[in-house]
Length: 201
Image (cartoon, rainbow, N blue to C red; front, side, top):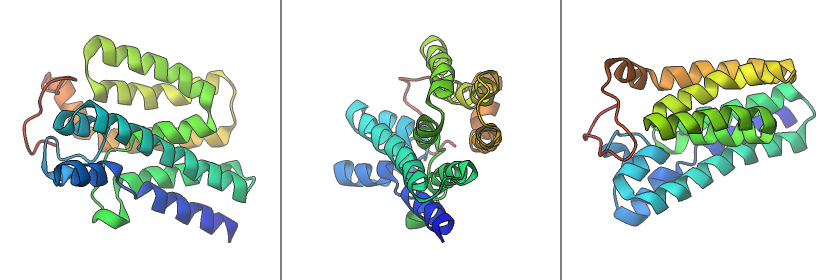
């Protein structure tokens, strides 16, 4: 029962789409119908500006961490902790409260890995942020982060449960960013600070 509760709570927490709620409150819009049509931090930045985007980033990160922390209180299983974190990301991507149309899960992923594997995540995050600063592609930094995370875990000899979980996150993130990957290879990806055309994936 504890495992079921941990997983259910994690998914439901993940399903709270803060970018949708904040955009609706501030501008009276469905964020998923503007910019890149994505319910996440980057699209909030492009459509609404820095402060709303910062708030979305903080809240989406927190829900990932809280989902894991709740699981930690309910069970000692590392597999369940990892599963709860993964389900929080799933909830963000496919939120039950918002017609299963969410974001790409980057901020929620950050929250999950901060709670589970802070030091490996820090190493991967520093490199990812550097890539974003240099190239100004948020998607590139996001993909670098999830790619470097399992490598960092292996090098630091962290539990195999976390390594396997980070690989699942990597595959999910690559799938959610598949259109971004195509645009990166074509040199058509939107750079940070550039307005994105309406109705792009």
